[in-house]
Length: 102
Image (cartoon, rainbow, N blue to C red; front, side, top):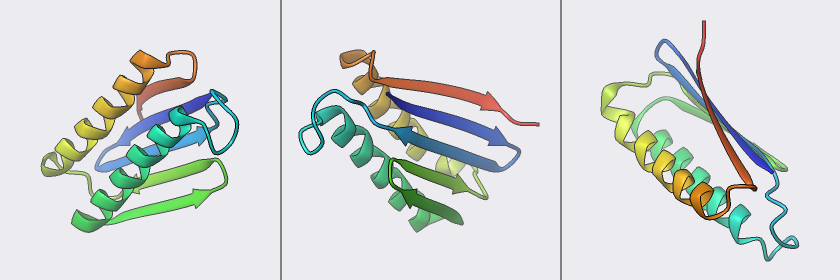
């Protein structure tokens, strides 16, 4: 299962995407491909418009937007909508969790 955790602490937004969908064998998993594409596109967009750190490891991408502003909210909403659409089609393969940090 892919777990997406969204945390907001002040002006910092962190998206932590990890795990494997296990929908199909490696190289054939359309759920993993969809989440990966949306996540990497989102990281690239944030990196173009604001101070962002993206760390990609096997099975995990962490995107930290250090100065998240209202002007960046649209990028986040497009990512969230893409993931919601995937969850609607494949609900047992992706989890979305949001929280406000301290």
